[in-house]
Image 1 (cartoon, rainbow, N blue to C red):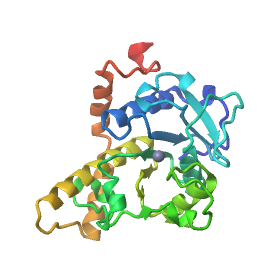
Image 2: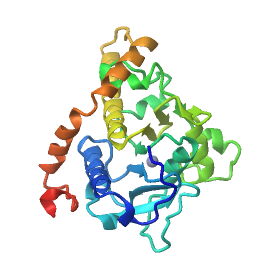
Image 3: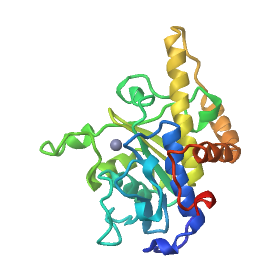
Image 4: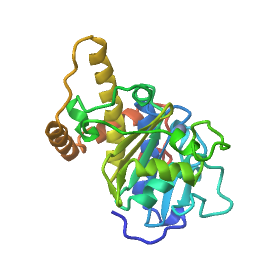
Length: 267
Ligand SMILES: [Zn+2]
């Protein structure tokens, strides 16, 4: 949990976090959570967060690729910052609404998107994804479009109005109730209280979607977790999330397409 009020320069950010963030971008790509699109951010202080510039996550490699933003308005702290993602408002509004959230992933995973346009909810049915609960909410941009019919309806979350509506679907009164929310015809937003767990939740949300669709294709009834089972499996995997991290680290370190100029191997 960050307690610092403001961080305005990357020199104030721990090198360990900078390295971990870049690795995190690569891990999301390695696991097909992002392609040229999608992004991850990390909270730096009560009023700032960091994410990469407008660049495919697999290509993020150095401190020059990173930008610090204000949570208040999703604008870069430095006026000469490189171009950022148009959907960075997703991140700023989630941090604004939920002080405990430390990291946010936005993914267009095609494994997950079908559940955002179907009447079948994405539900925990695989023991690595109990954190999903018994039904993952679907946020619909149309719920905002109806009040602003002249707005562009391209499904992208490019302003505070859309992003604050999306953030509300995660919980209430500043408390996250659903760490994952789907976005109709678009993707999902994943949150957690650490960068590692945000990546963990993203990877296993996608795997649960794959398992659920496979089970549904068999044609019989699918047995989902009860609320208690979802809660207890979520608690157990949450305690053991440290296990896959070194494996994922090795996977990206061994791929020549990923470069992390802050890793010991490249210094
Ligand atoms: Zn998007």
